[in-house]
Amino acid sequence: MKKCIILLSFLMIANLAFSQLDGNWNGTLEVQGAKLKIVFHIQKTKDMYSATFDSPYQNAYGIPVEEVVLNESNVIIKIPAIGAVFNGQMNNGNNELIGTFKQGGLSTPLTLKAIEAETGKSERPQTPKKPYPYFSKDVIIENTKNNIQLAGTLTLPDSVRKFPVVILISGSGSQDRDETIFGHKPFLVLADYLTKKGIGVLRFDDRHYGKSTEMLFNTTAGDIANDVESCVNFLQSHNHVLKNSIGLIGHSEGGLSASIVSARNPNIAFTILLATPGIIGEEIVYAQLKETIGGLTEQELEQQIKLRKDVIKVLNNEPDKQIAAEKLREILNNDLSVTLYYEAKDTIQEIDNTIEIFNCDMYRFFISYNPINDLKKIACPVLALIGEKDIQVPPNQNLPAIESALREGKSVNYMVKEIANVNHMFQTAKTGKTSEYAEIEETISPDVLSLILGWINDLRLGDRE
Image (cartoon, rainbow, N blue to C red; front, side, top):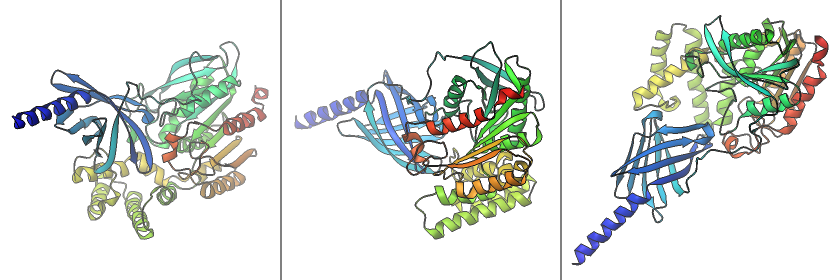
């Protein structure tokens, strides 16, 4: 009889766990110093579970979960869409799942807590809400040179008069027209601010978004420059744009594209470089390793730098991608610590994926491109800003190079400025580490917005027409 009671109690506990898995589970994943909020939405269907996965700070919602397995108190959640698996145990009265989140070759501790039903979407106080008090229209820009369509949004103070317009150019990686990151929408905030102050804005999705089928890793800053020039052509044919008052604002690597366009296109009225490198990309890579990789001894850091130097030497000296891939494979086989773990299932795939990223057109262009050459050719007014706490594009390394190039070059009207207490995203920050991006409520410092607007207004663009 006692054994039956014990068995019955066990079954009751198992059934309770089964029922309590149904619901919403919230946790914070720490990846390379960055904190990412994640949410699982789990639903019970007869004797099975279905689920979806959200990463709000990455603006990713409803990612399909292939399988949810409950074995007594052990829970396994498989997410093949991102090459990830969560394996955890129920704890604390079945209100917590304590375990590990594995993606590629990385394994990170993760605790999920049961929460009330919610979308998990992150609210940012500076993000504007519709309806907007100005004209806003989704547009398609044709890049006939590369046979690509770009989806974008044009905002104007009204739909009657003509206005100066600035084109926003996002940084490297997967970017939409709002440059969405960790729930922040910096380009939407910037576009809203400038449009309300009398300056139109055109922002567009990167090639791999919207109507384009171009692959991300095949796209260089030079290719994006072609897209920007297509945007310039689009604006010059628009009835409500002052054709001699079209400017560019490029953020991070987007500033490299802005420099390329401004150097070769005399129709650009002004250029604003936000957190843009002023030195060759190879040196940026080494600087970022020193600033962003934590927990390494000085010897380990030097080893990482040596590995990157060996990789970059191959890329610079071997234009044939097949031959380069074999040489990179030899390097990575000797030291796996440099692999990038991009949705990998095993060590071979880790190496293959890392080779693909290093050997792609985008990375090859970045490490070999020296912005100084184009900066010297820019004749229009230039504003270059980098945050004091920017660890991705350090101001002490890049601002002097930018200023020197502009001084030696054709621009007679330029301002180069380090902005106190802001990071790479121009948020007011304490340390500048990437882990702060998601934690800070502010999207862009109001002082930075005001500085940009004041500098543009001082150009008196309307006098050019």
